[in-house]
Length: 258
Image (cartoon, rainbow, N blue to C red; front, side):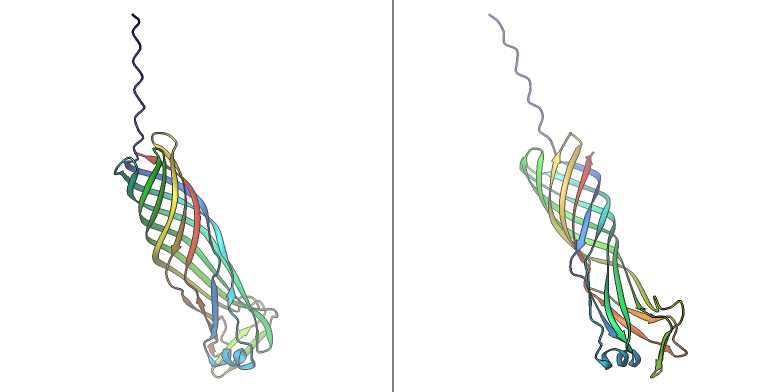
């Protein structure tokens, strides 16, 4: 009698357990930043609000590309569930600029404010469900940190603008009509992040992922926008008050498992 050949052994199931490293790239955006402006001294108060021209807030959106690296560990606790952690670091160009048109002592100008998330990182827990042996859906959340730059300026549409009074002053002579008042701030901030994603095992050690995160880097900031030339008196100034730093992102990446 003919002897049947033995059936081939089934391929071993893919295991998600292990450390991994990888890279990512994506896009981040923040749709509703707001910057309020308030006079800091009697001259700026009387030159704006005193004549019915209080500076309006500047509203704008920020957005831009981002990319970086990640590393983590997965533990597949059974055929359907996985837990782990991940840390990442991304450089970013999530930035934008807003403008507030004003009349300063009857002279037209504008207050400008910008915000730029230079880089950020997270340390997050992950928990996921294996739809198939190679397709993972997960939720994630944890700690976030980042570097934020903010800047402001008062620009006049004419040159040779100056004023002095009540012990304060400014002088925007030739060449200072733009950036007559300036201010800058750079700070490292902390907060939290959460989101969800999907990851698919392409080969034994390589997986492809896509995820969404909401990143909140804490409350807003205040910054002085000060006259570069005080016209012989204390330089006049405004306070710019920024809303909190929070943005959303989508990104894709590749992971290599040890």
